[in-house]
Image 1 (tube, rainbow, N blue to C red):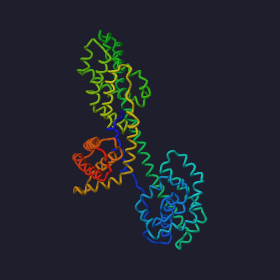
Image 2: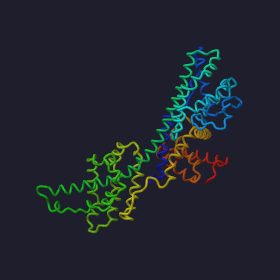
Image 3: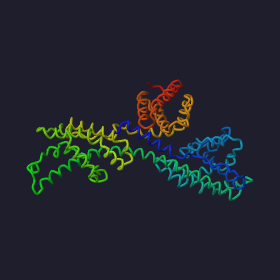
Image 4: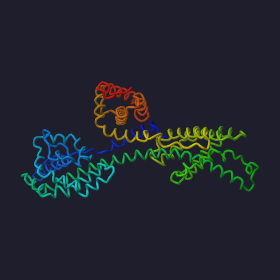
Length: 474
């Protein structure tokens, strides 16, 4: 029910928010004043980063010299993600390549440190987390720095061999590393939050789908109460005592009221329409004054299909176009700003389904199949992993077209990043489908000229990938 059009829109929106607010891993800057304390602190800071990488099985010596760790048959720390993230930093790559890289000084203790770490309670606890996020690993390494590495007498003795060693510098260098790991963990926590927000947005979309059915039930309930109240007047008219109950007894509404799939959405948090009396009165009055209602009430016959068609028409022509409805939904959930049109379409399709299948019909599932359910999270995560690489690629073609990259709308970059990810990571989706979808998103969510511009850049990138054998689909 949540189709790929909506999934793409939500991935673009979530990636935009995430990349706009994320903080990338950054090294502490070398001290401007070269005091002995600060000089040693910075040296120790870099050594500790390289030691974490070495313990994790990464090559951290210049000229690709092997570490004692790399002779292990099994290195349990090599499965951790944090080291791979650190190693992707260009500054760290430069430090590894430098000839004055002194990580070899720790060769005599690195295997023993590794053994202590993998035997620690903290490591066993980390392995129980499924899946462990980089924020969990950052916390783990902070514990290992404090409890294993800096408390190792031989590690301290090696540090003392540096003529700049001071106790103040030692404490400052350790503090710098712990701060770096904390900041890196905070960055990955924002990624975890973004993933959860994407999942929540899909759940909220499905809630909106059901809430629109609950609105129809609430409007019918109000009309029933009106008719009952009219009977209790001091001087009721014949019409008051003998009302036309066709609308109030609509069989389609009766069927969804009793449908088990709707029952869990009946709580007051989701069925909030009873708290919007002004809105529901306005909508009900508009329905009762409408031509479609008058024609429906004027016919003597009543079939389940006719009852469905009434509400399909009311929803399409009266409820969904209401600006008041949009304002209420926006106040209820930040996730519903862009969902109403698509969810309204699915509700209309569902009503047709009920009309064709009677009371045996069911509501649409949240996703068509497992492939659609996995499409959004995979597209989002792959787009994040490739964001920096694809931004460089996009800017290369922007320059080739005599555009100023600094004037390029950030939303355009996000849309193209997700589009390129879909082109490369989802081989079964045809190229024209991907292009058309993201050009349409650009036309709706970016600048007036974005669609045409994005189309040109993406075609250039597609041709490049095809010539390099990286894209083998039509």
